[in-house]
Length: 237
Image (cartoon, rainbow, N blue to C red; front, side, top):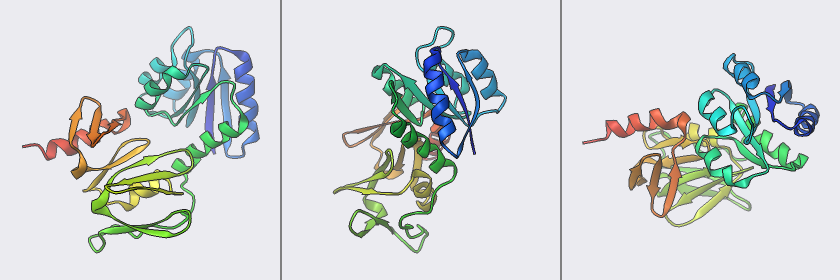
């Protein structure tokens, strides 16, 4: 069961999200409040696994809230303003819901949290990436495809699937990020964001909180920052 807090300064928004939460069997409503400080105290006391967080609030903005809790629980942003999406993803939000929020879009967002906490049975299990193997198999739409680890640049988690970017192509599979993180060798691949796993040897440069692989810029999430830079420091000359 995923314990949820809803914080929004609009009572109507609280009512809608409360109703949605009650419709989903794996969600449990802890509280719905217009006070960001009340929600913050509950998160810091360990009472929530997931917060539905409005961005623009009078006491404390959603972005400030995210920085204070610093990854203590999962967060889904809810707002009428799409310009905050980049800030949210740089702070490792699970998803970004634009108001008015439809139930099907809400359900897709909370499924991502469910998959992270209790990964479902894989559509096709990749071959364990041990010293014996230098490849994995993944199931795509019409076939099971072999992918050499040396060819993988990075992996991006999307709504209900992941994209594996290689030096030659993009491969889409109904996997989840936790499963891929577990099966890839830790010495060669590292998770740097809720939505990104990358090959260490494919990094071209790092600038502040951004990683450059070819023409792709990958953000470094706060939750993964310390671990990532420790790995980089061990390889510094």
